[in-house]
Length: 563
Image 1 (tube, rainbow, N blue to C red):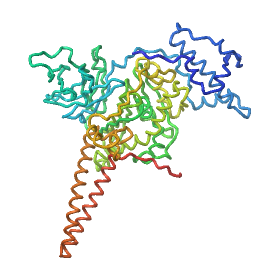
Image 2: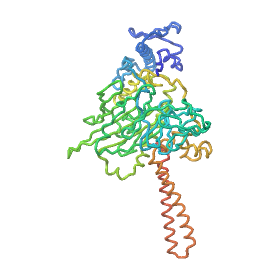
Image 3: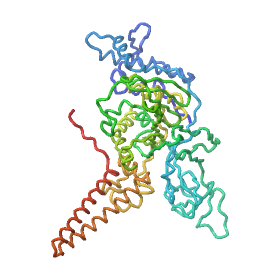
Image 4: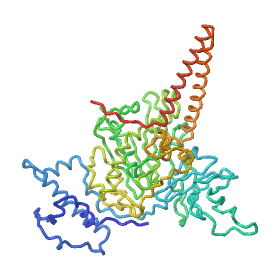
């Protein structure tokens, strides 16, 4: 799919709120540095025969004029435009750097996308997922094999992910049609006994592979898959490597999520004291060294300016895979240990993404072993909640502004190098995506986002019995701003923990009630004291269970404090 790249005329039209852009349409003469006013009718229309790179060059000239106009109107105290720009170039990444990069052949469907963690795939129900605007359903058949279909029944377009598994077959719950294997329909209850199932009554399939604990899907149904494109993460195959993995559904575009994850500069500020390492007083300039640029991504080293070496290695690889690795050598023994942060960011619709996070190391801290895995899961949820307000508003502004990121961002050399590299990579391949936000180019979604007002799958029965589609209480409110729906329903461990604590909570409440009643009826002081102590212990346990449930299901609320 090829998306339209915005021309210079379209970009100028986006400045309609600027009176200068509307009523003083000037052309900037770069050779004389004078402004020449001409009527709007005399502006030349872009030639349709121009190449893409020529259009990019026109964008550069027009936007350069607008930028200098804005700087000139704001300059005061005798500071020249040239002086202002030269000062900026010391710390700001050149907005026009990389403008003439060639487009490369790219088709978003000819890629493997991370669908889900293998360990979290339900054994007894189908799972509805999305890649860009394509909805798929994933399930385990009777043999334990993974099957992936288009999430649409060929009968009347009902979602198959709303169905159920019957003897290893996927059944649509609208009329009971059943499918198996390569999408073959094997049962239609409404057919006469002697009738054959129509050959057209089959569902479209997608190829899936399980690799290193992640299920990947090949999105093209016309081009054969390329297994060698499935990413292989070397550290996760090392002997003794231990990791914990979580899944989070997030309410903003996957490109904004990737930007956020490749931005180490925000961690000390946004995540101050969230774990043992992030402290706002450690915020400082960073050093970056890009060592690799290809048609499929980029890689390089980064570190703190105050440190002698840059020991963190970052790699981004198409379509949506980011890893941050570090080697740590023990000074006493010389033993080398490895640490990895892996982020698999699947686009799951306009303004939505699903993230698989995997942190691992060959040497785990003894302190970390004292905490259950669900504790780290909720801490990861807290981290994303701390950024959610920023990133959701960023998504909204990008959609409304309708201009490339170079017109909106001020990327610093000492903090935003990876962000600039990523958006410039999007310039090269964005034409092969349903939509994209690049450094110099954009293509907006051609189809409006589909908003599902009725919750699906796991929460359908709950929300149907409660007012306002699950509006009673915070746990079951079906929206991506809620931790329960962002993470817990996608995690077997955390959902199991919540259920276990709910059971214990009810049991302890019942025991406390019984022991209190017996204490009232008891005549012996010793028995009264013993029963009241038992009640106190049960109520303490009840409180602990309530706190644990809240920890797994309640959003972090940022409280601003005076510094």
